[in-house]
Image: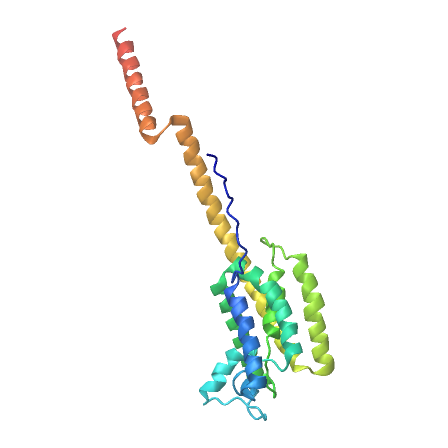
Length: 252
């Protein structure tokens, strides 16, 4: 009796492919929802970096919360338009960067960028700072380092610097826009991460190439003489043959 074979159907499922990027985006959405519908002024209280000493929204060096704000300000947004504009870049570039550098490294990059922008805001500006614009610009500049080799700068990096960073510098000078500072600092952080990452990859690639060359040389040696034991046996037999020839020559 013939039995019908039923092929296994693969069910589509949603994968949490970029944990850091997705978690960051979900937290930003949830925080804005809570601020608008449950806890008023939550973002101003916890998710806004303070300004310089002497300003209305000054940094309090004795307050532990102000130190936390140096990191959490990237999760706070003023409205949905502000949030969507930032997440459109983060959700587009974040998964690619997370796959390339790893979740832990990307989280470290985000934390460093948030801290640097928060500290600079607390030192030089008189207003609060919030939003993930600096993170978005960090990812934009970092993503331009698709291919980089020794003593070469990618043209894509130069073009992105001219388009994005040049625009932000011009906007900041013209309108004294504080958010432009976060964009520029985020871009600088992304550039630094890109150069450091490319240097590390070159070192790793060089070490890997050296190991491959060693393996290939070993393979060629074994291919020529056989295994290590056969090579030793062949070498010993050759030495014995040479000795026999010498003895035979002595007899004559």
